[in-house]
Length: 79
Image 1 (tube, rainbow, N blue to C red):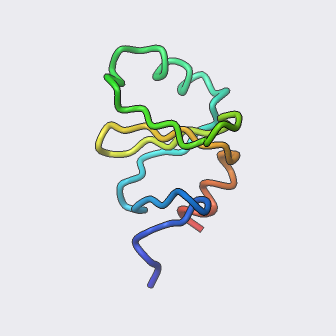
Image 2: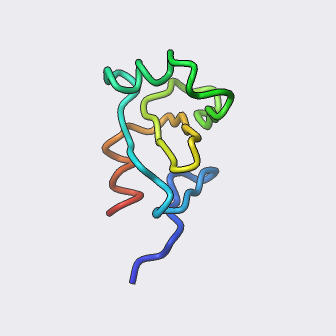
């Protein structure tokens, strides 16, 4: 049985069941969503001053900006 909470880095933890998608910042989908007005202040920058490399979309409408590559984040969340 896997745990419900995934540790992405030493400061960021997320609930696995709440994650909808993990995409690279450079993808067309993430660019469209970032520029759209649908975000409404629900974007959380968790890169801690580093360059953002991936975005985690949550079922609550929040988007988490992370410094880790998308492939690495996917492995940490879903194994």
